[in-house]
Image 1 (tube, rainbow over the protein chains, first blue to last red):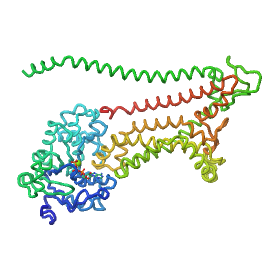
Image 2: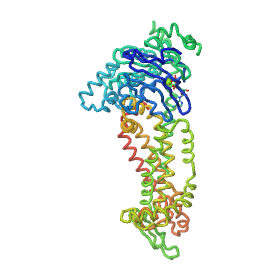
Image 3: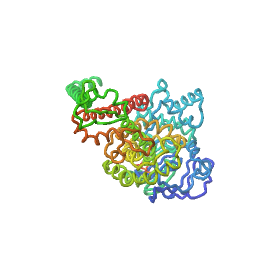
Image 4: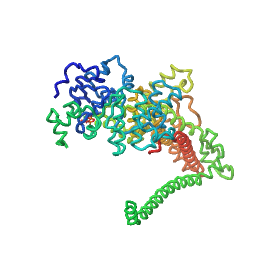
Length: 263
Length: 345
Ligand SMILES: Nc1ncnc2c1ncn2[C@@H]1O[C@H](COP(=O)(O)OP(=O)(O)OP(=O)(O)O)[C@@H](O)[C@H]1O
Ligand SMILES: [Mg+2]
């Protein structure tokens, strides 16, 4: 265990998300044990760890997706700009407006490309066609998809390739103009070329957003992230700058994982 | 050089595309063949029914569709009446309007209850029930779908009909006496309402199972995607989930409706076997095409002129045409909503 975790955060100014003593249960199963972590603004934070260690469980707590999982329970604090997103007075819907999420498998709506991108803005009450068109173009450009789809915005999103669909989902997420973007293995279903496009994109996104990404690939974490958090069996074992975690990990278990001893 | 290599590879594999083409051709022949055989079977069945029913169709004319009286005629009379060149016992009149009405009303009423219920249960199964107890509920649904209809019918006779006749109908009719379809005589418990309840119970598990599969297949990821974009649960359901499952749900409803229209045994046991009059409210007795065919089979076989049996075949033909028509209309509606979303199916 790293020691910094339980102390009051004096780095709060630059921390976008502050997670304290997070415990997550599925029924009686304790899936995340007392994890604490700071997510700095304008950085990429990567979550690594073996399958089933709780990476998705953790990241889904950051925009209250567990509200949708019957039987799931979250305890602890998740502060967004100092405000607890689990406070009773907070509407989870407004939280998800500020913290967007991209999923492992591309999940475009069975609608047109245009309607996919402007779905969020529409939900939040933007109705003007010109304004929506502007948002659509800006988001697709931001997601590096515009050139490939600008002539077929009114075609079904399901006609796109997997990699294009995933970038569409990122564009759809950006269209809501979130402050934090959570990505749960966004490239695991994609080929190397599509993956490298997504990685370039993530590198670009951190200029404006705070990005949290779950990845199975340590190379990917090393390539794109500034911070890395290592999870094992429902525990946040270690968190630090990516170079530190990969070159001189503090915990023996991290070292074993990095050097491939967990397979 | 690279193209050269590709050429060589292509040259060595020339026979392969050929045999693959042969395979695709075979698959095509196989699938179109199956489709043709299925279509031909349906057509043959229709033709057979039509040919067998032909004398009845000639004898009955439009009476079949416009009259409410079903009477196989005086079986002890010496002479016969002849109409349109077809002989029948004196007094014979084959009108099916009561049965058509009963068939449609029991099924529609059943679907009015069963569709919302099934949607709710399927939704709960996919989105609301913890993963731990889901298999148990699923098994229960499958079990209910497999219960033979005669068991539902028997439960209807023993439990449902007495409850309606002694408790529900007297209560409802006395409190809502002026309301059409509901007020009026309470009846015995057998009838339109009992039939609809039984049918609803029978088709609900089928619909839940198919709707659940449709929702699981595509909509859960979309639901999460929508919520993650800051939509409310309701917005996610109405804007994304419902459109994405609409066709599948519609198909499931259709399947269930067809099943309800044709259900025989359970309805026969609780419908009260009405004849020659329409029910004055939902607690009065009815009859359906499927039920009347079974219940009339024996007396029809004693009909000296044989026309009663052929009229039953004409009834079957009518039921067939009703289900076919509903299917075709539904398919046309679905084609209209099918434009988006199917391209990666
Ligand atoms: N809805 C659920 N109900 C019950 N248990 C769950 C649920 N979701 C996850 N779990 C359990 O919680 C643990 C952590 O799962 P999680 O999906 O967070 O792992 P992960 O690190 O994301 O794994 P992967 O790399 O395979 O995606 C696992 O043991 C898993 O079986
Ligand atoms: Mg995961």
